[in-house]
Amino acid sequence: MLGWLSGTILATYQRGNRHLIVLRCGPVGYEVNVIQRDWNDITQHEERSYWIHQVCQNDDTILYGFQSLNTRELFRTLISVNGVGPQVGLALLQECSVEDLVDAIIDADLSLLSQAQGVGRRTAERITVELRSTLENQRASFQESESVKGQESKGERAVQDSVPGDLVNTLNVLGYENSEIRAAIRAVKDTLPPGTGEDAWLRACLKQLSLP
Image (cartoon, rainbow, N blue to C red; front, side):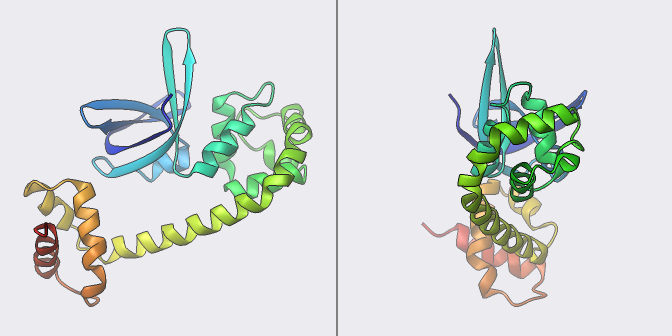
């Protein structure tokens, strides 16, 4: 069973209410269902990593991808409820953060849960009844994990905002992979003052990439 994939986004598209990507990992492209919120934030040819939930149905294999392990584990918990399939699980995760969704289930916030596509009041009640005690025991771990994830995401966005727009494309043309480029950017970012031009960024990254 697949548990985690990391690669390059080749394509994004919709099929009905499903939001899908094709993730190239080496010579193979995997079709992965993702949360709409994540799908909206994706650009082609960028590097992405996903925690994978794999479903085998007859002769078909369906993959669901999540950007954090806790999101995947909450998804698996949700679809353990009778009547909650993968699409409903994704819809619930689309409505709010992992932490807020856990709180809504524990607090029996039926109005919030019912906002998710495909979730009626009876389904919302079933989710709260079946999962409340389980999630109460795990609430602290979900809150801690989401807090760390948020801090990491803010830091990553700050780095990306300071990088000249064409730097990655230029290094791609020179033959470097996105994973190498990101590692080089992280290594040199603290050595360059704010407002540094693209030429200086390029020289610094090339120097870093040439290291053994």
